[in-house]
Image 1 (cartoon, helix red, strand yellow):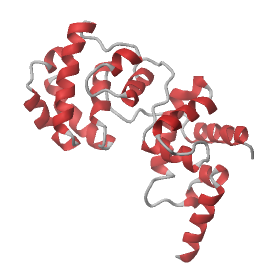
Image 2 (cartoon, rainbow, N blue to C red; image 1 turned 90 degrees about the vertical axis):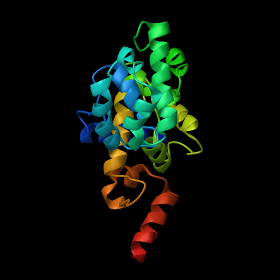
Image 3 (tube, rainbow, N blue to C red; image 1 turned 90 degrees about the horizontal axis):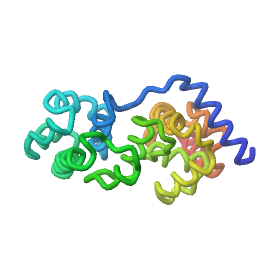
Image 4 (cartoon, one colour; image 1 turned 135 degrees about the vertical axis):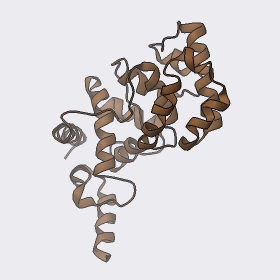
Length: 220
């Protein structure tokens, strides 16, 4: 199976498994999505979805958020980890949204990435999920699966993103990045991986990886 056929198999199988695609982080508008994505760094989406209702009950817009102190924000978001950095980022970006963007989340990568604590991945998620702009934010699941599927060398997330954008049609990026995340969680996790359940990797994956997994399974 050549690369083109492998890519098409991935697209078809993901569409079959996830015809409707839930968004992992609960939110109601671009601002609450931005905050949720910022909180998700090195934290599970499940945990973020437990914490954001507590935070948004006090402040679900930049004007209310800046009325809170950084310390108050930090106490609420502590369970998400990295709370000193994240609380400063949330407070700081809320100030900038008010000062420079009339309290609205900007609809450009450049403006988003200029905000405190907002990197390329966070900006990509917001552009994709809030504004429908084609983007391919790469998280640990996508990075792992692109390597397992022999579609990227796995050296770094920047290279994985380039490869994904080169291989997959632009009009599918926004669906695919979410479908791959859900697939990685359900069928191809980092730990407790069962190759027999992972139909995509079993069909298109790196031969060396599959052989290694089969050897490991045979020893058990």
